[in-house]
Image 1: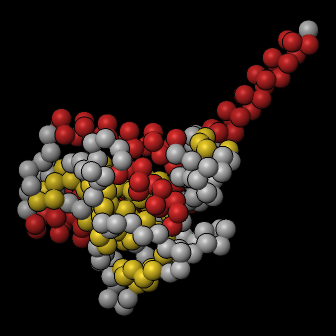
Image 2 (image 1 turned 120 degrees about the vertical axis):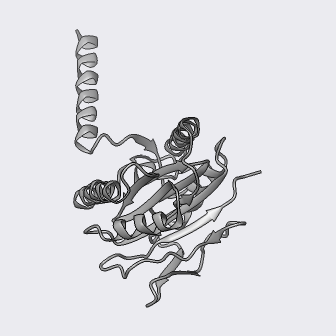
Image 3 (image 1 turned 90 degrees about the vertical axis):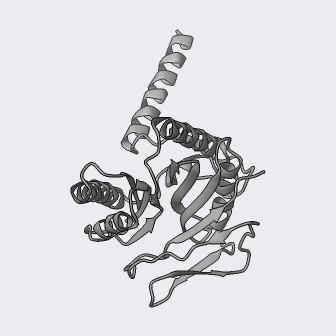
Length: 256
């Protein structure tokens, strides 16, 4: 009887944990911490509020509809919104189409920034898209298994071998996530679209400021990580209201 009661208690605990995970949006559990090797078991949750998550869903839906209406049957366009900033990837037939897509996305209510990574070229093949999906799955799995990376706060997209990381991360988390992506088989290029946030522990980080011309510029504060081969691209965007940081876009080569 004691054994039966013990098993029953364990089952109830498992059900309670499962219910809690479901209420949290089915967010996976992973080993994460303020420093590598800390070994603290935490919920890898999305750092966006429920309102922001819903806003991002509405932005993606509205932007997809706007692009479809602007370019019916033309091009292959993927739209990913994180914290009201939209990453545009895929292929379009001409430069004017690339500019048209960006203008339609910018016009969507709530959009606070656009990173236009559309390529002017023939559409990618079904095989290429399948390989991209596989690469994204590999990167996501490795992020979940990497201590110190808040995997639930990352959006991961792969297009023609380029993996994009979107999220709100500390400098340390950004470095860890970058290395995980760079070392994943199949990744040819890494682009970070990151809002850098302060380390809760009070460590130094990278500070970003937006000039009146609405281009993101990078300045390095004390303790900022140095990543060889990092290329920072200016991002054209409107002024961001009530957002702590503008967009940071950095391109990194894969590990050779």
